Length: 433
Ligand SMILES: [Zn+2]
Image (tube, rainbow, N blue to C red; front, top):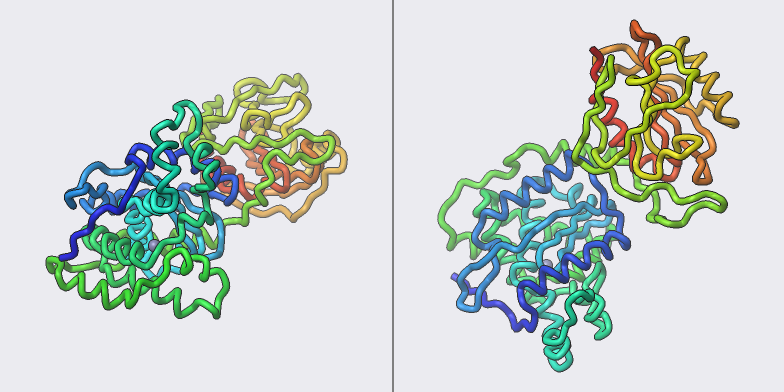
């Protein structure tokens, strides 16, 4: 059995963790990190299964295993087949890589491979080798309270996406394969699938764009399948499964329907407009309890009750506006949702909305849907956003004994696809009493 040894490293494990933590926001500025409840839950589930292996733990000098790095996993919306990790635990996997996996064992294999680069501390090992002379002084004198990432950047050591330090040597790759194979095997996946995934990429490379980046970051250390087969032969016999949780197909379907997020343009407001809220909706949900209905919404959104006297009937506890900080403007809702009752039918309501919002147009014909098992109508409207540019307004109406229940979901057109899954969750959570 191969005995892995940690490489030369001037950084402490704590500094690895600190660096990774500081680098995550930088990566989020460079790439489109996406959130989706099913996908995030699935990736976390796989990560937790893999974390149970002792090979997921840090490697001490004597070859024994120590602490577990604080791993986290993030999906990046990118069709390119790629994955990478940062020192100390953050893992990033492109949606393209999830789509490319033939089975769960392959996806788990990619994650375990990335975890292994973290466990074996390959990134800070590379930095240590490169800056042998300057690093010890910098690390010894690293001012607390200042970003270590920033201090390292002065030496030209950059730990963000596409950094040269994330391009591994062939021997690093062989180690990550070896350690990763142990991690996936402990979780019940056949390690050969990890090798198959990498080999499949090599076969496809050249024919399909976007794979080269992954292969240049993770060069083939030799015959992967043969190396891992040798390793598997030394492992205790196990019955491997390929698709243990059975959720991969579902998550791939979710990704397939995921709307392309708008370009990362936070802070670049249209002329004359202020920037739409950039705070991500929290996954912790809060419940709005109206008198005649309830629904759930992101816990970091703010609730405001209507203060207009003309709404009849249903003003008060059943008229509410909810949105992220900065989404509910003094004059209107630019980002968020509005719920109330209207005395009249959908057509009359749209007509009134058009009177209130100059230039509001119907973008698509009404669709029949269901809300809490009740027949409902969904209208997609288009108007001008208070932030500049277009605005999408999705109006859902349900005829109730109290009048026409309606909920309008509002967002700038550039942001709408990103927020749509949150709106859909809100709509699914509506309960009438
Ligand atoms: Zn690698």
